[in-house]
Length: 246
Image (cartoon, rainbow, N blue to C red; front, top):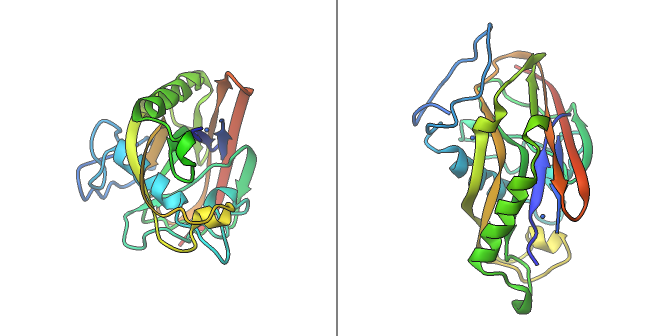
C-alpha cells in the first residue's frame, strides 16, 4: 500500500491517510506594511515550489538512530535545526501527523526564507515488500485523490497577526521527488524496518507556502487546514511557531 501523508500548520498539522518565490539567489526583504508569499509562479532561491516540496520530503527522512528524532514529531521544536542544510537560504518548518503542535523552542533565523506545507501528502514504495509495490500510475492517482480532498476554504496562514490570503496559489500538483536513504541505520530503522536503502522515487501534492526572511525580533506563525478523507472523515491540521530571531 502507499503511504500518503497530509500535512499542515496552524499552531502545525499533518494528516496520515492509508497517506512554494523570486529568481535564483533571491534575497527578498519582508515588508513592514504587508507580508505575502514569495511568488509561487516563479523560482525562489533557485527552485520552484514543487522542487522545494521535494527537498522538504528529503529533509523529513534524514533522521536516524540513535536519537530517531523525526522532525514532524518534535512537539516543542527544540530539535528543528537538525537535518537542515546550514548553507541553504531556506529553513523548513513542519506540521504533525495529526493533532496540534505549538512549537516555542525552535531557533528560527531571521535571515532565512521559510518553506512549509499547509496541507500535503506524499507516497512512494520505500520499505514495502515486493507484493505491495505500487506502479507509478497508482502513486500519481493516490496523490491526485489526496489533493482533491483538501478543503481550500480551510487553508490558513497568519504571520505576526497578519492573515495571508489566496493560499491556493501555493498548490503543488503531483510533483516527483526522490527519498535518499543511506545504507545502515536510517529513518526506516527507526520505524522498525531494516535494510531499506537507496533512492526511492515518489510523488507529493498539497498546498505550500514560502515566506521571505522575517528579520530579527519576535515572530508568531500559525498555519494549517483541513481535508475530507474518504477513509477517515474530516481531518484538521494546526501548528504554531513562536520564536525570537537574533
